[in-house]
Image 1 (cartoon, rainbow, N blue to C red):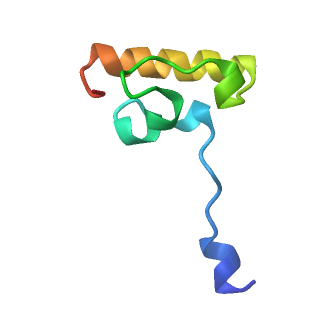
Image 2: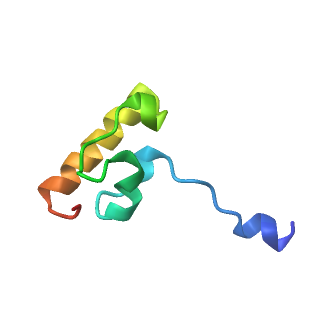
Image 3: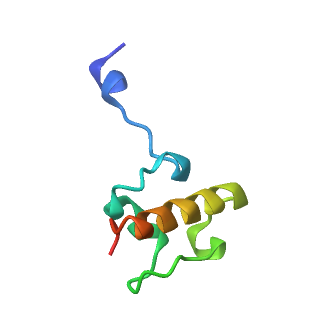
Length: 65
């Protein structure tokens, strides 16, 4: 195996995004903080539910802006 194969990172799925990183949640919200619908995020229904829970959890703990 070459070193490029070992260091290659996979993209994070919405289920793996931690709620303590608001920068990772920005692609799923508008500038005003509203959650984008599935037609814009192109997520499955399960992923959209998970990202919604994560955003709301982040809001409750005041990590996101």
